[in-house]
Length: 376
Image 1 (tube, rainbow, N blue to C red):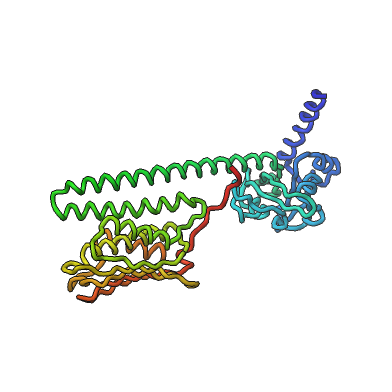
Image 2 (cartoon, rainbow, N blue to C red):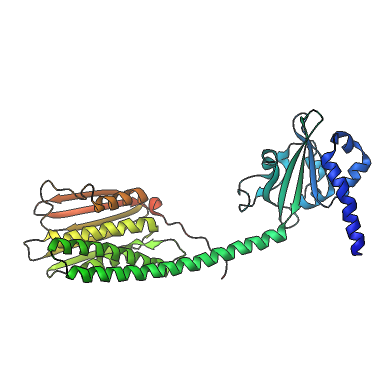
């Protein structure tokens, strides 16, 4: 039986090669014997004539079986009638088979064909132009091969690799969070040995920024797949960390926040800006006073969110602006404006305190959830 199958394959190989080398395919297609041969090829084949407006002149039974389209539905029509959409892996998802076969020669891509009465099929498509004796394009021949079983295996392998990368990413996040915590501790220890108050202030500010990032990684680790951070919870944690690091007797924090999901790209600069504002208030707003109040509000509604950091302290010195151009604080505020399309304003009255307001819309800050990749 094996020898018989091999002989069969050998006998079919010669006519297939002859098909691609036929100098006058038009005459060949008119031959009943040649058409019977094409009808028996176990690969879906479609031929179009190119001498005038390119139109389909032949499709074999294997194509009918594979695509679910009858010859009558596509004959004398353009390639655009062919079913099939890019699968999104080897071919762009929106690319259509009927368009791709005239734009590409040889391997065209992988496509998904939806069939009304049977399950969809995934195919590889190939396209070849046959020229006449004068070298002019005469016919276009396409072959379509069913790769559904292989494609499913490849998709499962891709999903497995994505899951492995997700696990690796979570491990990296865990290590980064631990490293940030260690760096923060080292900076604070080093700050105790700083020679001047100026050096101490710089160490403390850097440690505060790193602490804000660590808190962000903590939040990511809890719900890594949602792609969102609860801004209210995150700002509460940032405020708590700043107050703990720079606790001053007589200064209290008035805190009120709403739960509000935002993307990581919004939460990060928002947390850093709030960290800067709170640190500045604790260090400078109440100089020469026995105490005061720092207010943090993050109030949200159906339109968006308003974050306010205010104090009832001495206010900014006349002629001083915040953030100062060229300083890291200005870069952080710029990042907030860019990533969340946020508005930022700061007001200060000598002797009556400072008030900073951040406003952004719900749409601009919306998180982008990570699509689940299937069970582990």
